Length: 251
Length: 272
Image 1 (cartoon, rainbow over the protein chains, first blue to last red):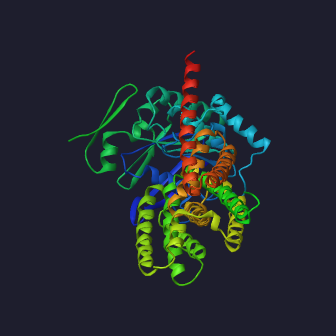
Image 2: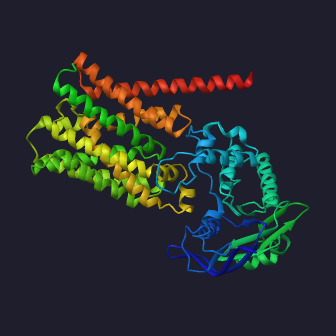
């Protein structure tokens, strides 16, 4: 079953075209890295998948539905946001997303609390339930957000630059956690990054975005000098070693 | 002190204002929109002086002007990064307008002073009814609106992805802030609204790990500072607004010391 389908998709930001005539299909239980330079449209593409940026009807299908209808089945972790000034405890913070878009007072039921504890347990972060956000490290906050994304049993997790403020130790911990969750729960994970290297061991496929285009495929097929040169419209050299990739301009 | 009618009115009026200031102020803090609360009171000043000029109740003028400005600020800048510019523009334009009205409005200097620095002892029955209606409107609105407001304030990107319109939330919330500002001006005046809307909420945010504790602490502190301010003003014969702003400042400093000591204590315990 396809988790994501894009057919002849045009994504615009105001009058600017970010992606043009995009066609891609992503199957279930895949770990996909989204790679591209700053401003190439990684976040915009993700926002289109989430239905935040409107696109023409039927051009995007998430689990067979429009992005609007599929929202409940998507767990989303946005780009880094300063949370250091908040004294709220971890459990209290992620509880705000439970029925957060519905009218009413932010009361929690016993079942809500049970679900929160369960997702915290899934990311091995039970101890963070009572810790204030201001006292958490970047990696702990990322684990907390991952727990939040798992609320409601989503089938697709979208993460926008989750490693931008993390040191390598935490990147490794979060990635192994993601891989474990993907295998255990059959999740499809879309994760955007500047640097694909940490993902090399865990990623099934890569989407390369640039120059209003996007290419999906295996890392060995997509991350080559020829493909990237064609995609970006100027000479690019890709050097591969055992587990590392170096992408550089060939001039 | 409590047998005098104007004192009873002052306690009731300031109590009502303190409750809604504590409640809305907490959200103003977590949304990082304290500047908006400050600006709306200044905008309201132009409305109040303009209303006085044409013979309408200053309270009504203040409320209408603040509401329009709140809606405008919310509509222009739903994202945090746009807000300072939007608020600054609305603030400076309406301050200019207020200056123009003051140029024509040369009578009743005491009324202008009351608007600027507040005079809770001068609250009349009509204004008291106005405050009661405003507080009921704010509390009912929050009954329906608190959950999405909290979600959009703490996690705007995620809230947007779940289908919440950040622009609508922003307009609606700043409309509420405008109502509370208009009420707050009756107690602290235009220039000192910050002390009652932001001071108690800042302490509550500093010391509370849960939302409900934060809200109740904010309301409790706002009440304590307001009633404390009135009692000390009665004893010393100094202005109420001065005492409220001083109590607010002292409480904030104490909360900083407490939270610093708490984190030092926690760190020390971790090391041991």
